[in-house]
Image 1 (tube, rainbow, N blue to C red):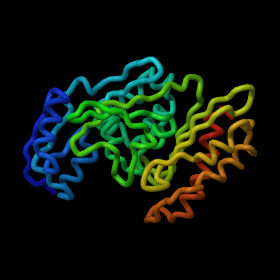
Image 2 (image 1 turned 180 degrees about the vertical axis):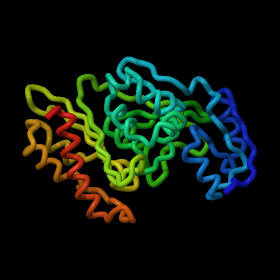
Image 3 (image 1 turned 30 degrees about the vertical axis):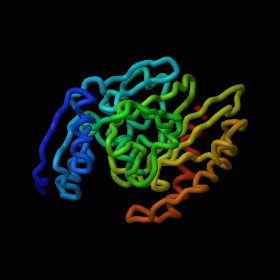
Image 4 (image 1 turned 45 degrees about the vertical axis):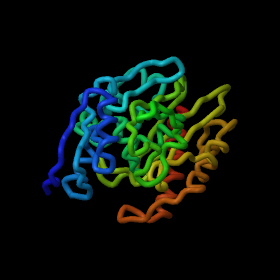
Length: 284
């Protein structure tokens, strides 16, 4: 289908983009990489009067070291994030997730911030950023503010970004020396995950000193498997110990039922994938 007519603006600064967003309100839509918005426009599920394209704002691109965090500009393509040595060294869980994200064409066109702002519960980046304790920097008419990952994802396709705000960067706390794994279950290559698990593990003295586990498509938002994390602390990274902890993966979740699988099937997958992801992250 062909989208309904709309005006187009490609600002070169965040301030210009915010001014246009404030002026047009609900009738404006922000476009990052366009991989989610363009299909919506073509199907006429949304018909904005104005599309504000952020790709000419150079300040929203790039990866940099900022002391305790690696900062990723919201308009940085997935391919750049996935291949960047700083991300691999200090936030390897994101690198692992990007490897599984769609296909090469989408990874080159889609953007890190755009995918996170879209907040699809089946998206591959929500669970890793949640598990790492990322911070989201949002700009609005009153300046910038920082939102913690646990407060960023509010519901199905809903985030803490206000209607007059723009996500500018994502801060990934450094996790040097942590093992990482992203386990994704699909029926068809490059498909949205039926269930996926993001796990990162720090070993100390031969036991799991700390583990962080994020779940994809197990509710209306990305989720932390905190019961698993608590059960893993102090345990050896053995098959038996990890299996016992992984059985808690679905605790407190509310997975959907659809053509790809019933909720109970997803709960089973969560436990299986958590066991695999934790063992791989621990190097077992």
